[in-house]
Image (tube, helix red, strand yellow):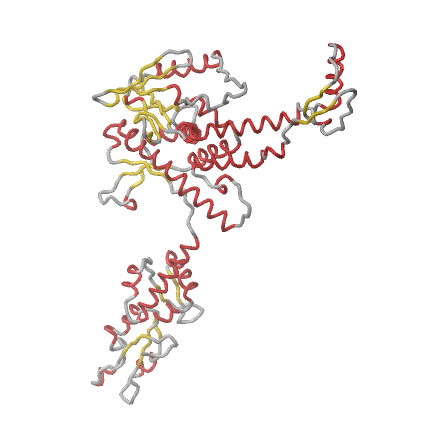
Length: 499
């Protein structure tokens, strides 16, 4: 669609929408406020029907719009960790700034409101006559766009109906639709609002009745019976005096004094109507339609850090992720192909909104560290053990420091891992990784071997540098006198004894 067509479409909507009167729905007794109409416009208007529905839709739209997105070049291996991030591309620029008036967050929040209220969201794509790639995207109200079905091709295009009634045809590459599948209509989405329209009516009626009770009712309510027929002047006087004394909140529950009349109570008391329970049941019905528990909309009776973190994780995993997956499918399968060969091998992906479970991570790290300690203790090489249990390589750099010859300095990138592991398993890994030099001490033992007797090493690699293969000290001078070195290096036990 040319930019001029989109501009005309949007400008026409902006200039004529205020000229079209909003249809008024009858509020006479027995007619529903919302449930007598079931079109997309009614579903969108329902967002302000109750605070519960507004909170649900607003929170869902905000959560989805706040998630960051990245563009990647797929790896031949197909693994996510092998992908390469792409920081410059026209598709990325378009997604981050869909049009000159909406950043991505507002664009996403707008169409997400449409999706959660009507079950579908629509993006209209704008092109330039000089370029074949999309330049702008606009969210369009679902009640103003219709798919054009075809018996052989399934779909041939779309029609946008402006507020003044003009029908504008759109091609397939000019529209992207997101929808919750409708079992009765493969072209349109299915809205949760349709299942709760009567409940929304009930909630609205209950709220209006309660308000009218306090503002308009002349309590106590009932009928005044008089023995004789009243003249017009007497009737007007009785009515005016009654209203003056009893109508309104400030006059509620005053004692009524009647002259030549009998009071007959006919009012159902508000406490008998159980409006609190009725409105509570309506809130439950709305949450049930959206699959949202109380804590997801901030209704928490007992809040602590654990429950708050659990609620945040549940909301992201069960509600935000499915909506993000639907958007990702539209971006990768419908938007990116519009950029031709420049988008080949590219894919959009969102940053995971589910917060990490620190408790589970700590338990997993503890289990891995304990497994590493146990394997190294039985003589397996640390270099082989660490990757086997899912820990990164930890290379020790032994050097003399003012603290003494046995002090240990770690490479900067590895120090944090060592601290984490050591804090979890105490000194088990350190003890398991130490080796000790053992000299056969007799008259034929040279002085260097005696001096090195009992020296500890931090790991096998360090020990084998002085004792290749575990036997024979590299600084032994016994060979000068025809004596073969009998020293060796052995794994030190957990309590420090050589084994």
